Length: 77
Image (cartoon, rainbow, N blue to C red; front, side, top):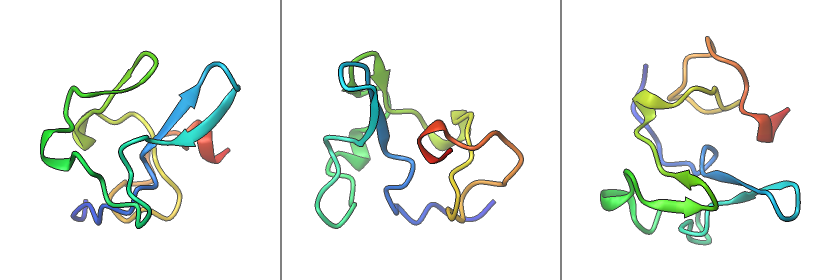
């Protein structure tokens, strides 16, 4: 597994009110996480908290950090 490049591709939150996936509210315009050092456990959406990558259950297409051995994240299907 390679190092996280902080591309922001995994920073998507399901909005249950609109029924769509949206960028995390803590992503800057350049996809840099505004709370990166304090993100773990931070509430980032309705019913969502930020997780460490080792606890992530999805793969993100085009991301060099993930292995390709898990299901594709629903936002990218």
